[in-house]
Length: 387
Image (tube, rainbow, N blue to C red; front, side, top):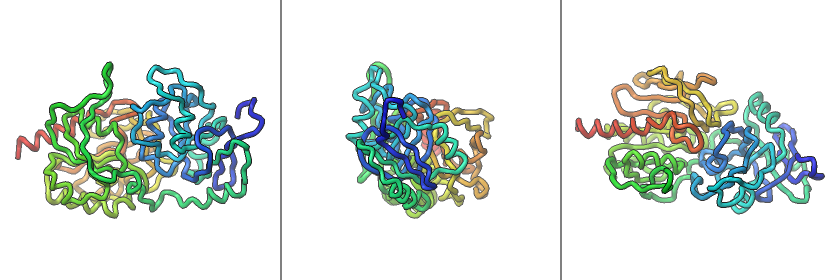
């Protein structure tokens, strides 16, 4: 909290009764959620609009939040999905040639709450040691807070375990995607020479994932999370993509897993999954998923490719993980986190079916893993040559 502020205008209440006061910005009101932290040094707008953050308030460990403003090109979906944000320093006026507006009015217009002036180092340590807590975040310009009610609200949040959030963030109907990645000086491009027909299942897909597919020659048709195997196969795709998304994979798997199993039984097409899509594929192949203590959220996570020995710096956002001990015969673990050894990738033996836990499209983050999109398209080319 800044020295010039005489009364806090925002309060973050943890379910254990711990309180953090600060300066509110963005929308006025109250929200409850799970609290996580993100270690990325850039990309706060992409993080706030990543559908994988549904049901969560994000603590940013990097202090300079808001300094480059916001712009429509960096939205990963139409509106922010994260419930709110916690930052160390109050957002400043932007200083960047791409900025279209400041962070604060953008959050206010989109109904998202922010709190600044918080000791984010202390908060991050608490999350690491105690696990991701349930919280209530309130913003009141007059600084009037009912502390008991806020703590009660935090305790009443049921958490993400058992919660299917993909149904809340998926598209309402199918659509085509042909926008390619941003490049200087013209910005986003348009796919002009499609070489592969891909169906993408939207469990909460980020736009930049779809742009990466289009940039590698994929004519993408996006289907809702509830799509059936018949819906997929009716489009006669060359490949199936399973997107990122929020919530408990076991809950989403109730309807996603039967679809994936049926597609695998009826077709030899390549399948590529990212994040929640990785977990959906693992469940369909017979593995299980488990809730993590505080998850992986950041753009600086080292992952080792067990087949090449290469270490990639990756972007991650997940609170559940595939239990590698439950992978069945015929499914190989391909990548592991060098932070904690958790599973970060799998593939089927003898078939072009693979997935990764991290985000190879970055946005924000490094592009060490962008080759995975080429691996997917190469698999479609090879299948077409041998068909």
